[in-house]
Length: 320
Image (tube, rainbow, N blue to C red; front, side):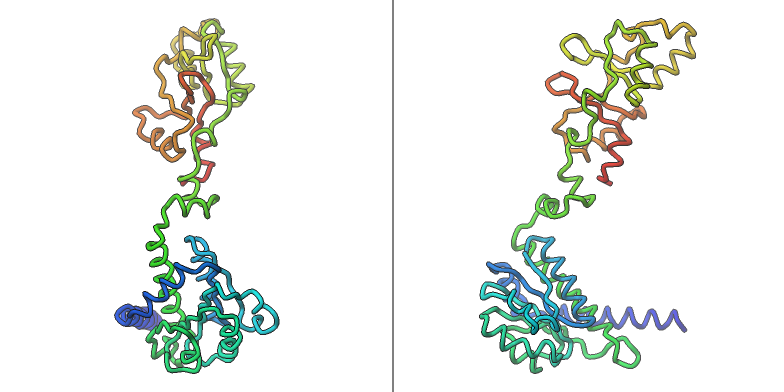
């Protein structure tokens, strides 16, 4: 019984979305133009469940390049209408088009000379007649068995609002890089903004040794700096090689006297290296594609050692 009910609701809402898509007309193009050319802000307004959709739409628009804010319909008439200017576009949400809190806003919005767009299932409603433009959802019935709880109507409102935001985003030429600027802490933003230089360990936090250093000294330096590899450099700071914990284990198994050996005798002279300007996401791919499993890559700037990129630091950066 529950399974059939679930399928019925999903199919009913899917059918409603299809009807809305088929019913899109030039009003949608006009709404896109208004939002795209808006020199103020797009203000979304609603109450109840429709208000939740309005609030979400403001967030979607803001994150895709259109300055937007949510205005609660009930609070609007108690002073918050002062946020609306003639440069704004106001998206109002009311399934019936008769929601009292929404309808009573139109005289004030008209006086403010803001453009108004009603998202509703009834273009011939009081709100529909008062609005400058109506985006019709074409929803005739809720999925609720009593046709009361906002279900299908809010689903279509949400999808129609997403369609509007995406259409504006595409017309604006909003890119991944633009998206990253508004989402600097999200994984996509970090993938597009973080460079190796932002994640690497700087020179003063590395175990840096000379080829003449004893292996014992190498281990001491690695332990002091809490790193899994030591970088061997010459007097000019040029990288001569790297000694990893794995290298140390292999040489210790091969020779019990390895602690008295010199770093130059056991270093890997041809390690993978990376530039500080490389994107962190590309650096992660380099780790993944390297034929041997490694945990650290020296960072070189014009063949001078400037840092060490540690895989676990890269993973902690949040790029995935």
